[in-house]
Image (cartoon, rainbow, N blue to C red; front, side, top):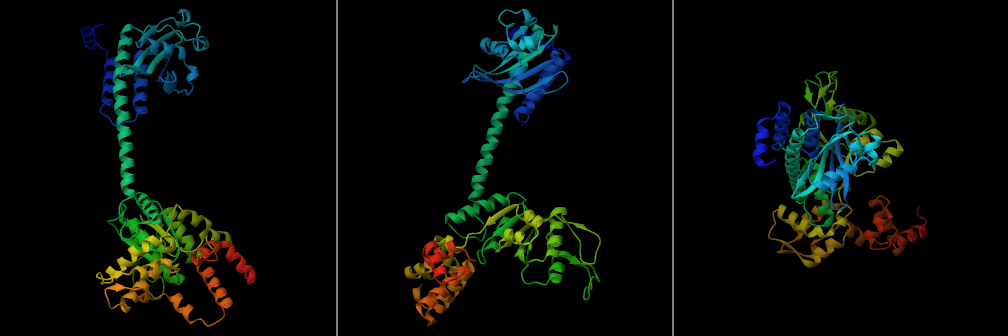
Length: 494
């Protein structure tokens, strides 16, 4: 049929055929995945061609094999078995690169011997190739166990139109999906290197941390910040908030350590007038005040079992009840918590609720101690110098070496104290080694016992600073773990 005949045929389309072509054409202007296009197309083919089954299979030229993409039968059921269809007929469509129509496959020479034709008792077949760049990349095949008079040349041409339209639509959908995936990948790569507010560092440990902060900030997940005291967990929490979609809403924080239960509970949940002596009016709690924003609970390991249960209810139900009230109030707040303790060990010991731990531990982030990022010390020190109003001062070479050799049990907070002390002592334009005074060094200089006593005292102090971790203790002392173990055995220390 020539092009004139084809256009003449389109003018005489039936209502069903025209609606099918119109529907498939509209898919070209929709940003949909391939599965949506294929499913819609197969439903239309079943309806118009009046087949019992229809299948779409992708053809892999390299292995000359077929992959089942989607299928339908007259009852709209789906099969995931390619073996239920005649792959031999698929190959006929591929070899010819043209539509095929058979009214009696059982008696068709070259086709009747196919096992699937015999087993499934296939009688009538209509099939078309999907062609791209002059290569077949898929087939649409409809079949029936009866002699289908609707399997006509007219419907064959109609099905061929559909195949061409679907081929264009799928090609566009694939390109859109690849583009969307590439854009998402680029966006994530940009976010991974996006500056994290108020946090300084160019070491690998900090770059890895910045990637995690940027990644979790894009979600609404509950975050558990882990790390030693003074590492900057509060800065990380604030950075997550400022990089999130909640940035325009409140960021509130509460330190949970060494605060009486009753006071902490009233601060977190608020209270009704008359709830206790001195409650002269209603007060909104911090959790309620942080609605639509972020709430940061520092040193979460220190809260009591009773408060743990109430916090669990906040995380599970997203609601709070003020002290003295019976009416729950819905809140939409992101929870970030932090601790320098081992919560998993506390769960084993029964001092921290296991169900609460899993609610808080959705996305744990470990903040590295300063001794694991010593290449950042010069950046941090210079930042503190400028922050304290002495930007004209520079660190001398030996003062920097002294800072980098120290193990920093107090982390960044301790470094800030040392820099503040150095600025007081420095009268020149450069901070020299003698201006760097560290507390432990002062203690060492004033020690008057024996070498054995000093060694024992230093080892015990470092073990205490590192919570008994022998590997970290050895690193801070510049010795092997084996040396630490031998010394502990020699000193009869358990």
